[in-house]
Image (cartoon, helix red, strand yellow):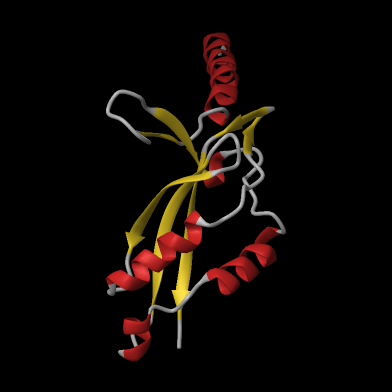
Length: 146
């Protein structure tokens, strides 16, 4: 009985030592922003303490997209609609970089327009882990509807 109690206590102490470490694990990917020589760690949006935010919040971002987005003439003429799913990185200075199309709308002109709109975005408030600003990947859909 005493031996089982000791083993249970040992298991509990081991678990309590491991749990704080598990809580600190972050989902981080490595991105090569410019050259084959340098890489940076990028945190995923849901795994930072403070998420990056567009100036004016979500409503401000929707207004910005609606004001900036221009429907490509060819897509408009052919009545092509869709949603372009993009990813980009909000850097430690708040600038948007490494814009990519994850899933296109089926028309290349819509994909290019989504990239153009994101590239025009102003600086975001930065994402943080603890008190440190970190680069964070953001995934954003941009809709094109007639």
